Image 1 (cartoon, one colour):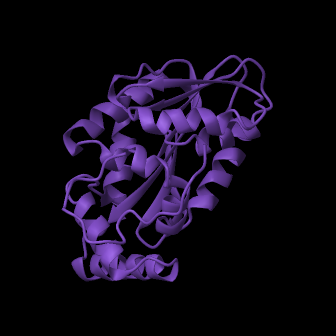
Image 2 (cartoon, one colour; image 1 turned 180 degrees about the vertical axis):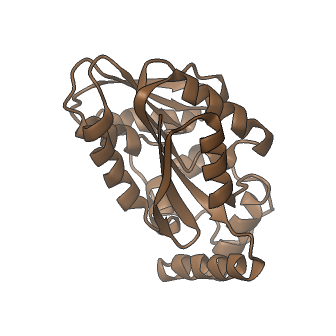
Image 3 (tube, one colour; image 1 turned 135 degrees about the vertical axis):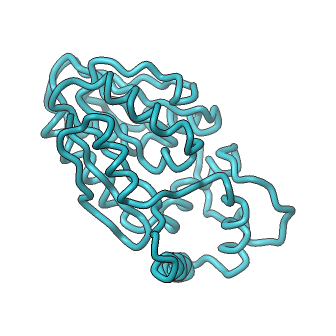
Length: 242
């Protein structure tokens, strides 16, 4: 099962909402690498945090796992025994390729794939939870409940890592970072047509929030320690410790 270069939007096409279908799954590694600044640093940090926070006989959750990069990073960092990693996604196309991807590596922990909406996922006995560029695709009105449910299923001292595209209250700053992100994509070989068409496809599908709003939500949910550890243009990663 091979992955292709991302050329989905390089020809004029009828506008349709972005979906994690087979077409996207087949180019996803190229797409995310060329579209998300700081992505590899996030994956490396998942591994480092896993080594510090994952405890024996606990569960880890990669919610919105796509092709399982974060799941593999969790697994790579683990030294604890009897750990189960739950890789959850509602896209069967993504999970099919995720299974192929995971099968290419030896695992320290048991990795189980689960096809479901993460809002229905049962979080329990968790020492680590990862939401990598996932919350932004959840309806805004459902995000508080999801974070609360995750918090309830985490053990004391457990860690949640959230990576997201963010917005800014200052509209001049917001537009500046949008423009800089578009330049990032151009520098990675995307054309103006591709950038424009993908942005239209993501309209009302990917809905970003401010970094401050994310931190407030996490604090209100009960997390003791919340902070942003990385921001690259309009993408940020936050750690929250219970």
